[in-house]
Length: 221
Image 1 (cartoon, one colour):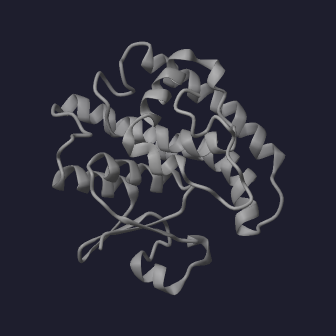
Image 2 (image 1 turned 90 degrees about the vertical axis):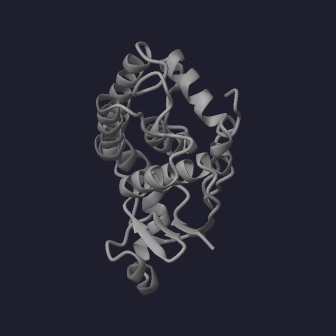
């Protein structure tokens, strides 16, 4: 049985889940409290991070590498364009959301509001929360700029860049930290993404002690 070791509010796990579901690769989801550094999990991934994907007798780690592997071994439906320039733009934006967006927004907002409690590491740091909120506005404006010139984030076809962005935003939307009224074009883009069948399992996620807002699973907001 194929298995994905994940945590529900890990954006990197969500990006892989979206890719798997879009390509209709069935996996069993195994929730992993990776911060506890369980010895069995460390044997699967010595880096101690989720996600980890077991496909047959293969163990795959690092979300970007996993998604590229899935693209090469299951090319349909494609999540990467054919030409080099377009593929570069997808990879650039995946890196943007995996690194810059995560560090400046998700880690500061989700990390302080949720993971401190889940991991038992103390109370939220209001300085980090304020910094995350400021950065979020800039990132939403950048995404709006892209979407005013393209149908999707990286071009005119949906790609892995859209899944990388949606994975981050969906985690923050779970805790009502996305101002969807800031941009109608961005709101429309997210409505299209979360209406896809691949998104259904994400919208069903629940983290004990944290209830999502009423609009979270509403396809029409």
